[in-house]
Length: 422
Image (cartoon, rainbow, N blue to C red; front, side, top):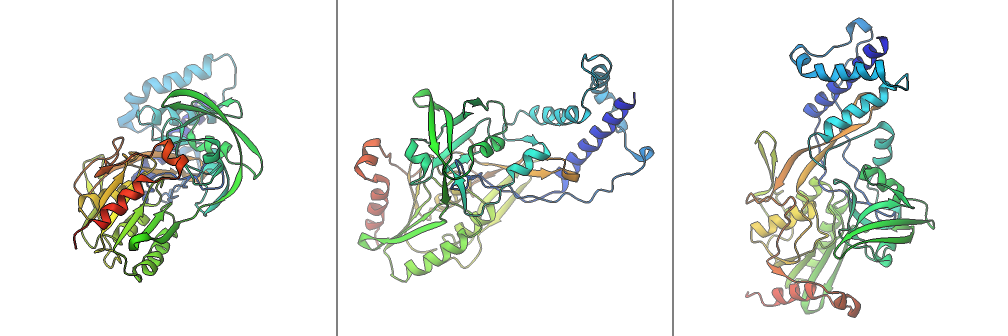
């Protein structure tokens, strides 16, 4: 019974820590990026610090199941004892049982975006967004059941190999990754420059399973690209919502606006998202005041985030380009601009990532729990999660357009700006 008692103590402590950390921690990231340079790019979650918890040092001080939960947990402890008393291979690993209990608890929520990571997995997955890495070069979504491609990066190994938006990775180097946490799958896709990785992809349109052999490369993720187009139109492509993106955007706007352009195109195509604070800063360059995003929590509470005064481009005619690779922070930005009728949205329906996940590290490096803590809405209260944003002008790009070097979405944006009545 000592094993039973010890295991019970460990599990109660861990459950308590999960609840406490979830109640007090803050800070979120919207969207998951994979750094350009490795097979995929991922935006590491903001690591929040749990409140200080004084751990008891004497066995007599260790907590037991709270009285109000004793009846509820009775079947659990009965099962725990059965495993310890009757399972054929003894002794059982109490640590694995405890971690399995946490994993099962999170999975029982029925939310594919919530999950649990062991200490080893969490350490691997907590990769900072430093602007470069070695891999295949693709934006990915790690919040679902599979590691899913949001979009390959321009001129990346992933793009050259034929990886497409919506591709789901189901095996790496011939080993199935079905059922594995996408953040861990991501780590197996990354690797040294010049090495190869074989990705087995499940594609829905058309429905097929494909193998891609990709040579990893060092990929530097540009934050922004800007230039003046013909007809005196300014163009800015924002590739991510990283730590430097806001400052880079401000610098680009200062340089372009000095030319007194007739209009501005903000290209958010294949931008997989990033930091929510950066999204608010970016929106604020185009919207001078007012609510730009709403966070709705499980208890019905809503938190409104407002524009930061002093934006540089709050008056210039504006068109925003989006596609199905525009996710999370990109959708926040485009949604606010659309709601305020600040500019027109051109392209195809966006990805539809509108829930807020928070990675909450557990005390004493015991891993982390990811939980969906809120959903975000546009200023007009539109829910985008699993729906996406519908552009004002739907313009497709065909394979023939790509082969011919045509960009009908960009052409439509220029047309709209030139036809604006002054």
